[in-house]
Length: 452
Length: 84
Image (cartoon, rainbow over all chains, first blue to last red; front, side, top):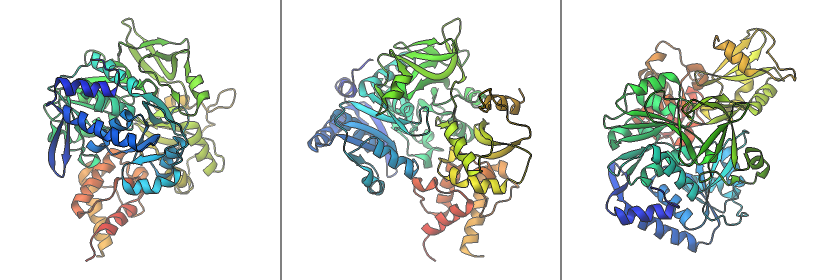
């Protein structure tokens, strides 16, 4: 069903199925259920409180809890600009996000709020219905994408139109809510279909949450699914597995298909409020049907271009030049490469720009990373590749002792999230191949490394 | 054996139990978890959860990011264990 915004979605189900379970969560070892009418009541009560506080922009340090979900909806309904933040982001990155978003209030862990208080500025004017998600975008510097509850709700409709859930379904939300895929496909997808959304107990329970909540549907990034498959942590009731966030390695997809669940694969960006194309569990898992509200074309150089009038971002927060570069006449230039097959299905084939997408969906912008690594090594020629989903450092020159190299690059690595850190050093014993303009041809080294 | 050595030994045991493919690898306090062991972020989560259960401690999620070496992990556990 299509809803105009969060308020309409909550009101509809509170009216139609007041006693049906909207959210399931754990409280001190006991499973709790919140009905649609109770969720609607709590959100509106909290929204009234937030309205009375007369603040403009609320940053929510997302912990995936029941209270966190209520706070997100309430903040939006109260008319505040709402900024979703990862409470697990590195300290410096989080401080930068708080400053960048010009927040005047924070919700979440009290210790963390105290640490971040010096970065509150409150200089931004109100931005009714705006919800900001941070993405690495095309630079390493965190950049916020401005979405709205209307665009996010439309995105949930778009996905549900191809992959509907029923009110008897339970969708397990294991992904972070500060990631648009987690928010739309882990939460809104279920609620917009009147299904129950079970809120994961967090990373400590990744191994047993499926058995605890018995979901019938699950959204996951490949790294998480790989983990769940490896430790046989999926429950037999699971009927639908929606994968997204990054390209899925073939072995994980193969393993997923050995389960009884329908395995679907989604493609989308933060800029399009999540998915724009989905494979539906039949035939080629990488052949994706374009969602009803969206149109995809392929540029002459192979770039995927998206028109998503109902789901498109308003722009990058405080970066109009980046918005103009990415969004031209309503068409998003994705920097992803792909093609449409004879049936109009989308296939992805790579990235146009210098970005690696890791299997947990996070992006690694290579030029800045390589520049920092090279600077730490006194200007050495190098590049970073992704092999088996692990970033490896390739240095020009003959093989040598790596311990001093690790020592020199350690400060650069320590500034980055664990999954972005270099895992291995290799040596390229010839001059690194370069373009006429001197740029290292990373793709050529990657192909050689993979024996292609 | 000091308490720190006991924690280190138990930590090594839990790593190999959790990820049997690491059987036979040498670990010490200076072992860098990402690069020397090949443990990925999901594997790391699993190990930390098992360590928390084994030592009855809780390492805040935000601290996980800062645990670079096995020595860091041992220190984080030791700091949170009750004094004997």
